Image 1: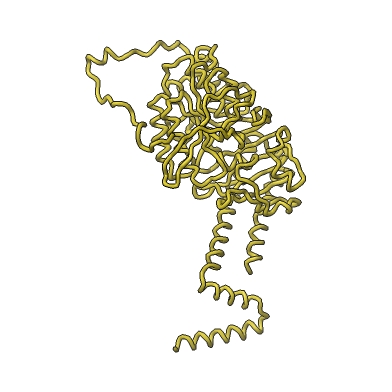
Image 2: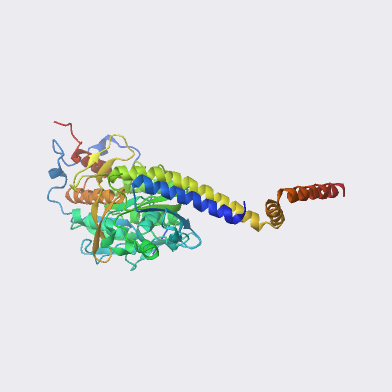
Length: 280
Length: 201
């Protein structure tokens, strides 16, 4: 299937104003607890019913840590610039997407995983392929899009900005790896994205909220056990793996509280962080 | 300085940088690879002492841990690569050395990944976890600037080769630089005479 760059991603009919009569007809938000705890946020959740997209190098669905993959797709760009997202049976010969998918699955065992392959050896044109894959994923209204990658390509920065804003209003949570190098890269620095760095803790549910963004949360990303294609496992360090942890947590939260929109999910993540409340 | 020595000096610079990275991390090896976009490969351009046989070796840019860094544009450390030998096969095949830990980080310049810096079996007492990542980022920034500058110099050199008028200038420069001092003075006098002749016609 092909995607069209500038259609089908605009917000639905905008409501520019609200009459007094209509105000009373707006649905009220479900009740919040007095204090948002981990138990309220995702206790008992398995991620069932949520759809998570792994935007990466593909996923090896045969790995026991990954489990079933509902769909696998590959984004590519024609010479004339036409974007395509097609069924993909290439698996994951790079291994990075499989590692991230395994972490998401470890936290949210019953979520639905979809792979969109946007990475290959050709760095040139990769920015456009990444944007094409993200555009398609946003159009599919996934609950979570996990992006353990970034691009330094300024030429796609505006497109990515528009796409993550669009995802935000579609209620899709985009979780993206922060860069820990002095390099400007995208899209993790945009406010509509949940940006993630690493901490060295072992508790997969432990988050730290960063009061000084653009990195908003720190999750386990140091010496993490990851799945690699062929049924193997290694230990690795990187914000990529911290990002997958937060994607898994988002799937758990969204499964238990489907009404939460992206800013409310960010608030829940902040509240369930180890420094989310005053220290007693 | 001729082309060969210029290329040699570029490699010496990158090798000394790899030696520096190796020393800072107390590692078993450090390398700087250039991303060759023409055939989507990574090429070893600078290696720490003892790994010279890797210089010029190419492998696909999405292969191994270096491939992770190049394709995701994110730094990564893998601490038990021997559990999955394909991660280190590009090194092992060429160097006969199988590392346990590999750190790799992309080298980015002007919006583009131009290479990868890789460190093998660093000493965890030198740096580990987030500290290792921070140190890696500092060295990578230095390596990226160096590699970008050397790429620019190499492209300018190639451009000179491609210009017919400049080929003559380049040949003359090489001839002059290869002469003994007394003969060079004579050659320069001849050149001045030629210049006067050409200006008057």
